[in-house]
Image (cartoon, rainbow, N blue to C red; front, side):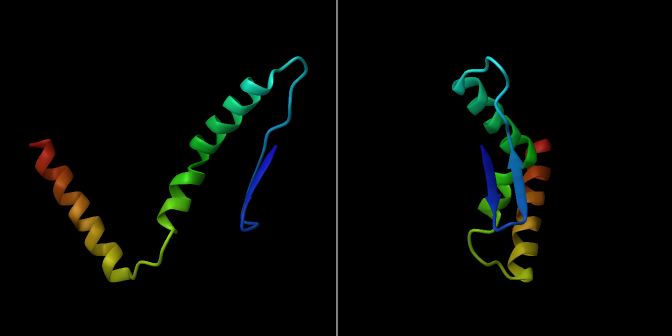
Length: 69
């Protein structure tokens, strides 16, 4: 099984001897999670200007600050 996102990212999982498809799928999903592929894909769903990105970053920082008190 392999996953390619625009040719930039490539992730391969080959089946091991005696491995079930369920465990192969679990390993693949774990690798996708560890690599952050889905997180990056979600951030690139639509275009954000640099100003908008900075505004969201400041908003998240303020929220973290407020919650940590």
